[in-house]
Length: 444
Image (cartoon, rainbow, N blue to C red):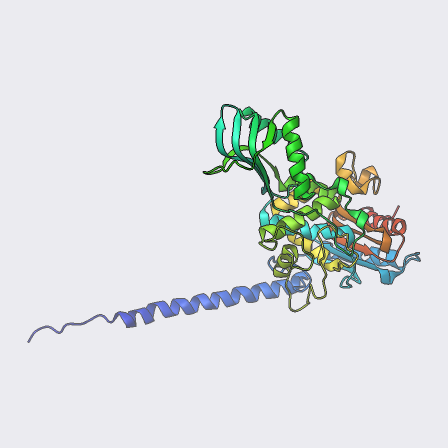
């Protein structure tokens, strides 16, 4: 009688070995999350008040600092003032503890004035990247006979808000040996009409003489290009009979970084550059196929913000109105809490945060970094401790201030203040006193 053969049942081996391991993993995961939940209760962490992605260990000293800061602001706000509290919105967030320490009318929809430039800049950086560049090029097509182009010269350009003239491009082209053009000069621009303020804003807010060259309309750009050719020693003779064939070839190029466009937007509150960036985003998103400004179309900035900051539980963007990127429209509507959330989002991106603090936001110090702060909060002991964006619409009495500051307790705070229906000078004085209170414990 032969030996009995045994066949290995691999399916049973799988059940005997793998299933217990899977159950063990699930059990460990459950214990881990339970431990985190219990530790957060004993550490004083309020999940709804701070960052859900970071488990913080809060000491008694840290929590005491929060309570003291809340008490200071409460005491300051309870003092008699000439401003009506219903026209003031304040939101203050402690980065160190991950908790909101003060809120007043923080969900009330108000015109943010030029603090609208903050979410616009964040959308531009996250959509395009700080290293994104605007490009402009001179291209030629046709036959080059010695120093003469018999064909077409084409200017192709983004809506670069930093280009001031065509001298550099013409000099490059001339350096390639082209001294005469017989044929045609053509222009293809990202924005073929003139940059204008939103219809709800005042007409003088974006004066034509301060509009960047490439945003003054196709007709104006074409004239300036031909003038620059002649001034640069390149003659041009229009000849409609010339019909060049073949591909275009680069004769000159230049570019400017988005970073350089955003610094005057944030530090100096440049409205024309803010609008240029705003509509450049629309173009890159394919929202302006006609290369013209359309106010009724959806904007890329709002689309980005609604996608990034959606929160069905708090309706964080419910009722928001985003008409432009500069904040010139008095019909824009945001709330103080949202500005803080935008600055929190920027702080979580190391490159963006360093750009804001080290280059772009205004800070009270000597030099160009003062920006739109001018002489505000100019005491030496405040230097290097507050980085902000200012905002003002005088015609409706709106003023705003938002940014980062270092408190007297060593904590870092993100804050936003919006005043409406108030004299601008009074509102700014209130904002500065509140910031000084958080940084030094005193209002003067």
